Amino acid sequence: MTAGQLGAHVVEAGDSLASVVDRYNLSSELALLNIPANRPLRPVLETAGPLPEGLLVYIPPRAVLLARDRIYCLQRLRPRLLSHFHGLRESAAADLIPAIRASDLSQARTDFSESFLLLGKTVSSMIEEAADTARPLVGISQAMINTHVAEPTDHAVVNAANDPLCPLYWAITPPILEFWTDFWSIEGWIEKWQDKDGPQAARLLKQQLNTLGSLVVQQVDQRLRDAQALENRLRFENRS
Image (cartoon, rainbow, N blue to C red; front, side, top):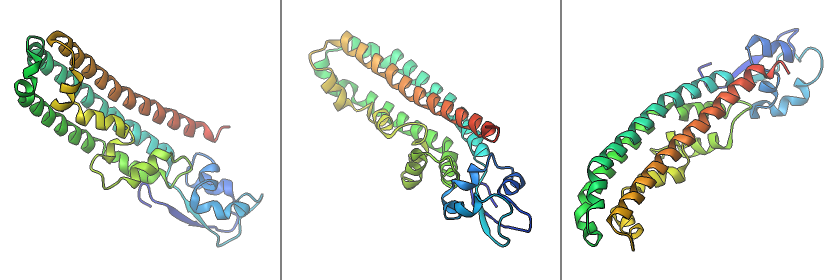
């Protein structure tokens, strides 16, 4: 059985639910009982004593290993995001924000369109790079669906597999991704800058850039905590 795929075990003489769990080093009996493929077998699997010879029992991937893979992937993604937003803040602080602070915003559409377009392209490239870094999360979600601990988000990621950004959907919610993608639209900023002078507009841009970076990283941090909590729960599940 390859990582993430369901395996199969044909019950031999003397096999029990507990012995099958031990044989495949699963976290607990729930790992067999609660996967969708084995639910029709639950009345038989839960019977005390040996299982019927010849019974086909499906063996799930080890969810604890998938959780560890997910942690590793998120740990790789996080510093890339931190570096990205640090670079954006530096670029904005060096050129764009001083120019906005000193400008007549009535000319903003022409004065800043090129700068915003360039930053927007940089952001789009970074999001694509982040999605490539996060690509293993799609396979992990597909594998998790074959375990007893799949989340709604796992199903959502798999259902969106044709979306090029779906690798990020487990780590960053689509609304925040959309906000991140659309952030550098000059038309949106023209609307936000209504009734503001240059210094006010510059402060607003800086504040919202900081907020966006915090939101993205906070989401990844929360999902990292979720994955760590799941890994801990699975390691100790069979001790309860």
